[in-house]
Length: 266
Image 1 (cartoon, rainbow, N blue to C red):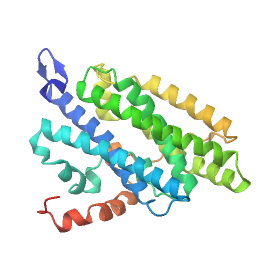
Image 2 (image 1 turned 180 degrees about the vertical axis):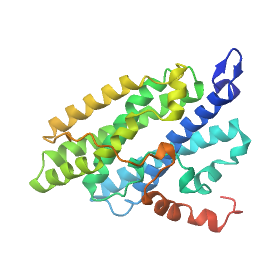
Image 3 (image 1 turned 135 degrees about the horizontal axis):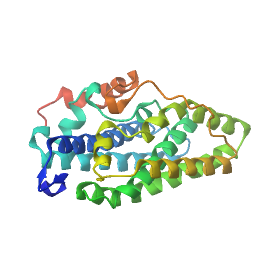
């Protein structure tokens, strides 16, 4: 994976290499944590079809995380293994956004979380698929196809909830407001992303942000739901390793088997 390093005059700068690793970890950790959250719906979906759909989306996210972790390990043996990155880091070492670690709540809250997340990654992957770092462009081109399905699935549910019963509309609107403070973290480039952006290696944040906000405004308007007027952002920031209590609780469950049998071969 040497060819995937950020090059300057034939040599990869240490800061750029570290920034790339951290940026990849952000994407991978987002996928892993959300994948686990969605797996919690297995056996609890509102219908058998939705139970299967959420389980399949969960598997897509877990597969994306595994792919990126393995790429990092291939590039730097110090990471150990994909399993080590997933199961043997503590919460303060994860770089996922705060949105994905939030509890599932009711079905409407899960769907709103998925819309917020999938819409962002749809437009992010659209830009990354043409970036000069092959590690990112190759992955983004493939992952975008999966995210496109995730966004279509969640978007259709938003329309059904918003234009459904009084109860479904109220729950969807409540979820939109409750999760809105976590959107800003998605749209604000992390320190790692900012380094790569400055070197014209990755996405243009204003383009992603503009497309994202336009999509949400159009979708929510069609669903007779409202975009929150508040611009207050969460004081937490997973990109800065500042997480909510939900992440440590999630990891205690997700990592329990691997940590109980650290020498086991899976």
